[in-house]
Length: 403
Ligand code: PMP
Image (tube, rainbow, N blue to C red; front, side, top):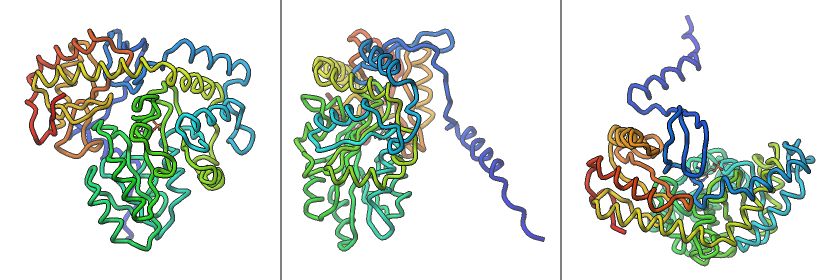
């Protein structure tokens, strides 16, 4: 008798049940209303420290007006992929503005950051190539490498020497090194200058995913590469998203004109999908202009970050070494992180507990994100609530350096 074929739906249900029994089930919640940093859920108004709306642009009246204007002129959907008839004036203007802001020759829009990373890695890499990545890179960089068929090597977080050894071990393979600019769960900035020097020495191509640095870091908000003064020559591949500091949705890759032309030809997640709605591109163009012009948003965010770090250090909380809007408190066990998030919620504060598999086992945390939409009183309220939780004190193991 042949063994019966495994039932895929049953297997998935078992995996889900295992997550539930390990207390690691992710729960989907419906937000009834969003107003700045306030969210209404099930009739309760909560002060949120979870969103990536770092500059407080997501509800800006000028973005909403731009979206409406473009929708009136162009309709809602783009009606097809970019290469068919979906590439509208709004997309082209946004691409030009993004290229100018990031100091690159050209930029190319993708519908999401996830797809942008899949597209770049799949278009550039092939079987037999080498893809070297920081262990804490975002999931879509890892998935892009897997999709490409290249050999994937992951180096310990921010360890440039380890990355160098991985490159040196494959001296003849075409190689790409990919790193987050600002790490999404830790908030720290990659050693970009050292990685750029390494890539120059090893003739490897450097890709920086600046989803969390773009709009926030650098005097003009051009991101972690702008802040480190690294141009197209040092970092040929820059990817960033429009769904975080810019308050919209979508992403782009910026680089040389030949690179972008190559992506148009070969990046399947660009070619075979519907272009983002032109109205969204219109709103994002407005966001680009506001984010560049209104430096006070970055200054206000920086003031919130300073206030939080100073207060958290005074309370001896387990802060991570993060200069960015992402300020994790490292609690260790998944249960501790979940319990802390639940206690904060009872006090009217929404903070996400980040647990395995999103972070390694034993490194669960509260991921606090700050925004220019917050006021000092909001940060003080969060600190006061954290004080009541009796969290473990800062330790070296937690990487806690004060302010
Ligand atoms: N890269 C990083 C570092 C991210 O944090 C995210 C989103 N969380 C993405 C890429 C994916 O971007 P998007 O949400 O636009 O798909």
